[in-house]
Length: 399
Image (cartoon, rainbow, N blue to C red; front, side, top):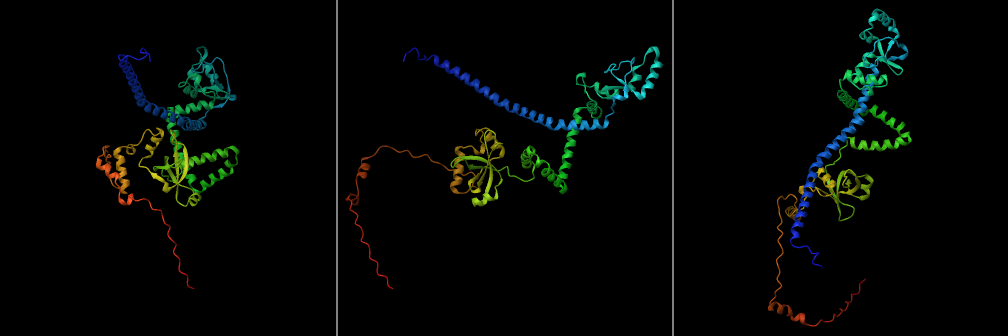
């Protein structure tokens, strides 16, 4: 090898120090990333969940409440009942684009004649002014109340939309208060709906609706049945022991996997197996919410002393985050081995002292060598051939 390619001893410390600095920077960066990512991801998930709740629950409920209020407080009239007059003063937010009701036409003309050359005061016209919205017209006072709060580009184009905006400001002062009332009404409605469905006539009506309407629709029936099974699983009142974490040999003997006991298995499977079976969910990493459902004999599962959260952390981290009480250390291993050897799991603090093997020496003495070479007289005799034994004659059987 050429001596020019071999780094000199003076260059090695510099290279080592540079690599050490790079490793330290990399370690600090990963440490900072590990500290900052959990709160950031938590905040992102919380914001996403709140957005989903707002888009699919709060917003539709709020819109429904606003529509109901607007439907009962709508003061709009057909546009055919109004006429447009000239020489009237412009009004705020709508300028000259407003109408006068035919029933108040004579009153407006009287005000115009009385004003004479000075012109009509706009405050005198406001009670009779109506703003057109398509084929409808709304009172100017309602229009002005909405126009004060929102921009002209966001102004509703229909009379119903105007009164929906008016319901927010006139009855609830802000959209937040309206949303809070809408959520409260939704909770109350769900409560009374649950009480109605729990009753006999309510459950009968729901069953008839499912079997008579939803079950006959080609696509809706399949989707509805699947969704109903999922919702019944999460919201049913049956108790499921999710807190029991076990270990089972899967996918073959000698390989152990975590599992969550979800309940007892099916009757026919239990009868065929000839012993009690339990249903176990085998989670997958790094998404433990998915997995495989197995029916395993109770005699082949091992209960683990860990919580469900610790089991989820173990699966999410792909086995990196091991619960403290399950880490394999010399002290814990000796303690568990001692419990298993004595057959008493209630012993606490017992430790097995595993002594190191005694060292053996390779030296030997002349007496040892002589003792190994000597044999007993019996061992020194030559091997005798095996003489087969003569079979004994059986005595004749007496009749």
